[in-house]
Length: 356
Ligand SMILES: Cc1ncc(COP(=O)(O)O)c(C=O)c1O
Image (tube, rainbow, N blue to C red; front, side, top):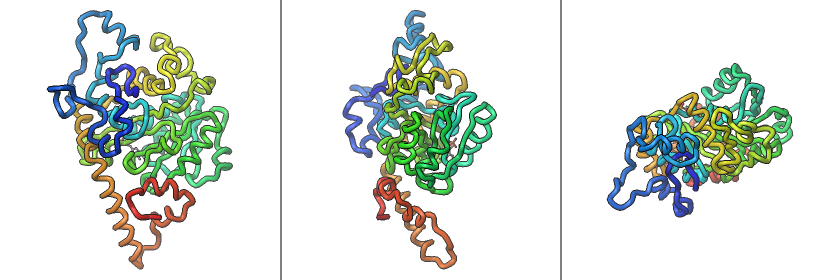
């Protein structure tokens, strides 16, 4: 599996078929004989090469490897590869924060004059990013209720819509996104569905399995799990056919003059185009790289994610059950969840809890 196009790391086939717990511990990094058991922290800004020709090939994206940590770093790539394996994606990149992840995921395919359809029930910071800051950059948005019908969702689309966005379980409203429905409508309009999967984590829900094209994370929350490191991640499912909608995505489907005239979708295919462009253009121009030290801390959190998430679900349900028995409590969001018609998604999200 392709994880980082300019980087050296690739996942082996076994990592895709392993269970989620094994992936949490093992995926992304396979030490060779005598190599460190834990992922090495490559705390280096730059990488040394013997000839300028070697370096030139890396710059031109003609060879895999590392030259400058703002673009790529081995520690980050190990951890991105693990998250890609957990989500069932083909390529991933770490960012300095969840905000950067959502901004990059959207701005990688939007520009001045574009339009986004977004669920209105999302984290306040993301709402501001889209409704205020990206609006100043000329990107317009229509917010839709996560409970909107297919007809209502269809009505929100415009000729210049380039992405649909939502959160699997929204922060703080806890609304559950009907990923299948949103994906179906997005695909009818020839655009990808981007899903922020911070709250469930891939232990409890893998949006790609329900039709999402791009998955984002604030790794700052459950993935890190220890309140130690702010971070983000973008995972590409590798399923969206950019070339089939080339008129909508010129940034991926026509030559990039700012990067040696590369056409990302042609050179790296469905599996690698999105993340390579985000690395080569957005990371190059905006920065927002996660520090290798923070990537190491994130990986420590990921190693216990499959153990911690079921406990979070158990604790949440115990609190909800307690509250449901208190006469003072007028409304409980968990009961709203039960009332929706998306039990299939819920069973997946709460697969370890009894909500049926
Ligand atoms: C669902 C969700 N997405 C994104 C973010 C932003 O992440 P960060 O704080 O890592 O920038 C948050 C932060 O609370 C969040 O809850």
